[in-house]
Length: 101
Image (cartoon, rainbow, N blue to C red):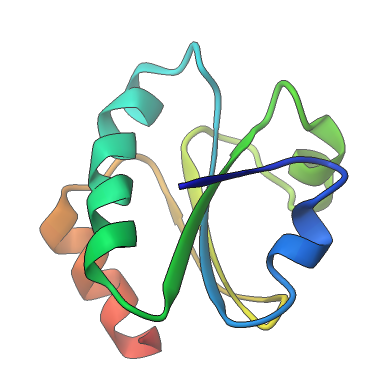
């Protein structure tokens, strides 16, 4: 998984399909979902999985209107196409992602 920041976010999601986890190091549900996201990053070709630490990159979190951690935003060519709030098991995340793959 890649780490995106205030300075790299826009270019980082500009082209292709990107799943971005907005979370924080102190967030227990974020730590639970990260191994699942790492699996999805390896298993789903054509999907780039990244994370944004909302404490280290507050401008990106503000602009994306993130109100809860973890929040998963799915972007296609820089445009938000779907959002999921909270930790989800892998099977539910795959079902959520399938229409966009």
